[in-house]
Image (cartoon, rainbow, N blue to C red; front, side, top):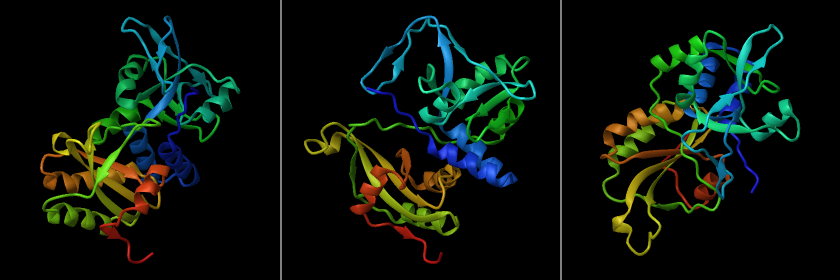
Length: 265
């Protein structure tokens, strides 16, 4: 199975920053960088195994060395990529070996190399946006992201239902969040059952809040702001977010009613 990866959230944030390099767009791009995962070209001394989804798994003693690029000014940077296509733009149609990591996972390597490597550059043959190590380090200290990216694999079942019980507080929090955030077009509230047998024993399933957000742009800061409002009324449940601009998101919208819809555009 051919490996597929596409971080359009980060890529859109980078393109917006390239079009308008305002402080606001820089913050949104940095938020997307630390909230999501990227492809990182690397070399390793032991071949990994590959699962059904095309993901590689390394043995604990494998030594992985990230690759480096040098820009036109002689500055050395670690290249990050938002998609397989962006990798091919730099390395050709055959691409190169990559690992998928979050910024939290990669930060120790970045700090270890800070005397020799200036920082990272995302999509060097595309948006070509550099982030110095010191900037990323300072941003991570100031921005304590509550988000952790979770990937839904092809063929994975996702069991959703309409929420049960007293929903007044969480609906009020989400409606308030939508009203005060001009980027939000609509919000849908569901519950996700973490189980392989939702029909046989739904009472045994762990239940999460599942919040679908229809937004003008895929800004992960939206999820951060909503999570701060929802967490106090979540009754101890985990909270999952998804943008509606995905195939799964569009399918959910077809069978769901929003709890919040933007009245004026």
